Length: 106
Image 1 (cartoon, rainbow, N blue to C red):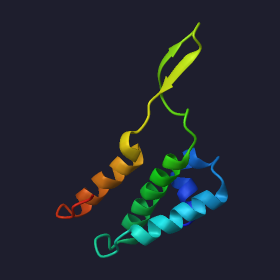
Image 2 (tube, rainbow, N blue to C red):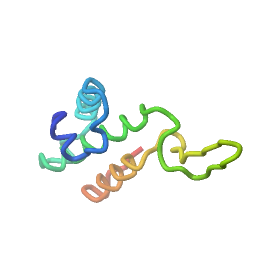
Image 3 (cartoon, rainbow, N blue to C red):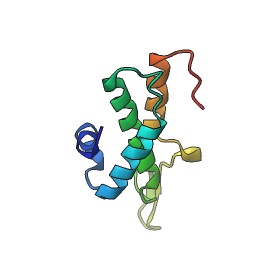
Image 4 (cartoon, one colour):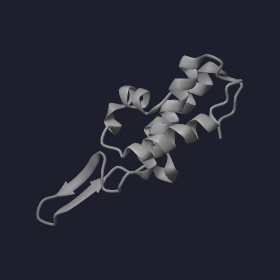
């Protein structure tokens, strides 16, 4: 997987700086265990999900799903991920467990 592949699978990150995507992809590649995920398509899916997770963690706060707002007090509250987790991390964990149920993801 490279930057172009990542952006094709995750177009929601098209506004992310190229060096950030490249670093995310390279870091994710170093973490994916090819003994668990032996097929290239599975490795690429895992790399993509991990890259999306890391990029999402680095994005500016004050973005995301609006959970509340007030008009006169001009206040907006956004959904935040607790303890550094993201939707992409959850999808990654589900994916790994589906491919190898005996693997423990921490």
